[in-house]
Amino acid sequence: MEKILDIITAKMQQAFVDAGYEASFGRVTASNRPDLCEYQCNGALSAAKQYKCAPIQIANAVVEKLNVADYDMVEAVMPGFINLKLSGAFLQSYLEQMRTAEDFGVSKPGAGKTIVVDYGGANVAKPLHIGHLRPAIIGEALKRLHAFMGYHAIGDIHLGDWGLQMGLIIAELQERQPELPYFDPDFTGEYPTEPPFTLSDLEEIYPTASAKKKDPEFAEKAHVATYELQQGRRGYRAIWNHIMGISLPDLKRIYDHLDVHYEKWLGESDADPYIPAMVEDLKNRGLAVLSEGAWVVPVAEDGDKKEVPPMILVKSDGSAIYATTDLATILQRMQDWKPEKMLYVTDKRQNLHFEQVFRAAKKCGIAAADTELEHVGHGTMNGADGKPFKTRDGGVLRLEQLIADMTDFVRGKVVENKIVDESEVEATTAKIALAALKYGDLSNQPTKDYNFDLERFAAFEGNTGPYILYTIVRIKSILSRYGAWESLPIQLPLSQEAKDLMLAITKFGPTMEAALANSAPNQICAYIYELAGCVNKFYHETPILKEEDESRKAGHIALIALAKNILEKCIEILGFSAPEKM
Ligand code: ARG
Image 1 (cartoon, protein in one colour):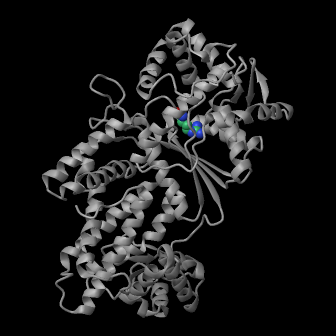
Image 2 (tube, protein in one colour):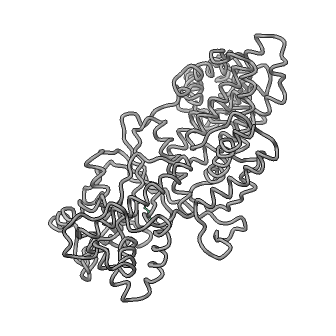
Image 3 (cartoon, helix red, strand yellow):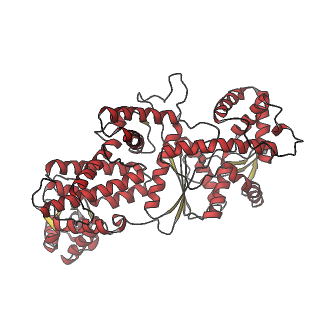
């Protein structure tokens, strides 16, 4: 659907032409004085210079030519502004179109295009910790937003499943149980199908091994094990399979809990087979050069304000690194999915890494010249006191624990306020807790740090997830008391509150476009907070179910129903949902 700004700009441009001026002066913008008007056009001020006359004279002449039926108010004011308020009839017909169009008439800039969203970045065999919350939540929202805007969106977790952590576990296991067949180089039989460790063993083995990295002898063993695993040593491959078999279901379980879902569970190991040929090719084409024993791809560009060091392709000891894997992953994605866009969500401290990889991918022709490569670097989540989040004993808090803490807190409120029957406590709690957690995060600009404040995030009032849910639940309950509401048409606004709500609803499409262009789910949060505020104001000022005139009542219902549908669509994109009661 055409955006309101575009529609009234076109009408304004026609009025400029009809009054004898150039169309280009007719650009309309949202008002910067909402107390005076809804929209404004400042074109007469610039036109005055060209036509050498008073701006107000032009403004008056243009206003004469506008179709008054579209506006409640059209005013030329000194020195030459044109102020506009849309008419109720205009809004009614616009909202009725939104109501009946697919996805509220939002534009689909991604139609026919594929995007890969690389987010989550979990590392196998290491428990998810609070650092994994933001990439999961922001990435999921951006993926859903792209899908809503027409893209074929592929979410890929890009597991850390190939690095030193695997070698550390293998080395540690060998010290503990050297008799296992995995370590016997001459063993040719079938390895056991049962893993030699459980999930909780693994959760103890990894940190123990990691702490031993300082011991040079152990570190060497771990490096050798990593190398041999990557070279395909059978016994180590079998251990790797066991680790994956145990770790993945656990990761999936926690991501499910967050309503975060991946289309692809690929990892660094899946990129590995592409590396040898890629490296050979880059060497042959002279794109990779030798520097102090390492093969590197220079990626500095004229005009760089900061030094961008070359991307290391192969270290002097012959091993591939994180960047090599990411480059090979781009190669795999281009071959298999031909995406128009790849978007990575990680901590912003990886900015330089992605800058180097993206430049190398373009320079080497691994990504097409017009493939969009974007890194959304997020800030840190700190504790409520603004200091880095630590457990009481100074450790890193597990993601599962954070979810559990939020859930316990919310459950307390649900039980205390007797919100639902006992049988529904858990399901309702889970929905509210997820909204608190996700909205608390997503309402911040991704790049900014924020403080995790359980009580504030879980509050039912203020700019919070639960407040948004509460608004939706309130509308749902009115609708269910009303009866069949699904096909009621939008009517003329009967109050300022109704009109404000209608104006807020019209901003849905432009908000989605802006959130997409800026990779900014926080813009969706700001929008639904505004929309929910308008709904609640309307609700407080308007007797809805008590209205005796059936036709007026139907108009109120149609309006809040559309608001509810839009709110629900927005939270679905953000990655949470509303309960039936709250
Ligand atoms: N596993 C990585 C980490 O823990 C994050 C992976 C992000 N994605 C990527 N393609 N590099 O830092």
